[in-house]
Length: 223
Image (cartoon, rainbow, N blue to C red):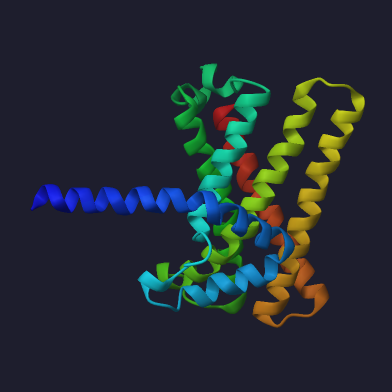
């Protein structure tokens, strides 16, 4: 009986992983083309029963994780081993392989939806709990994943050493990632909190600055 339950669990796991090949590009395209709609979709899906959630896309945390995995794979294929893996300075000494580096990136980019979600709850003057945090956090994972992938590609291009044009293109892509993400955030604050354009822009800007400050505090620990 235990063996049959194990086979059933393995069967479900293999099917779930196989469906990622179909639903990842679907989720990616929808998030790129309709980020606000996907954030609303994330909110709506959390109101369904667990077995009926995200039936035609990937769940937001899984989408973020797979996107960071894709970005990491692109780095390995095009540039090679990240210097952090071989570094012995600070907390970087704990990063001994690509798995630990990927986990670090998951933690870093999870800070973005976390900070934005906390900021929204503060503006709403809600009580900060796991339940109140879950809804905005899930919504934020969709655009954060696209931002992470685009930013990763932009930062990766200058390391290819393919000439000045490629380097400039990389930094322009990185800049476009910030502009796109900032626009999405301003629209999200305006829609969810019913703010004016100016106040929504301010809320999004402060949130992004808080994210950058969090990164600035964490970066020296592994540099």
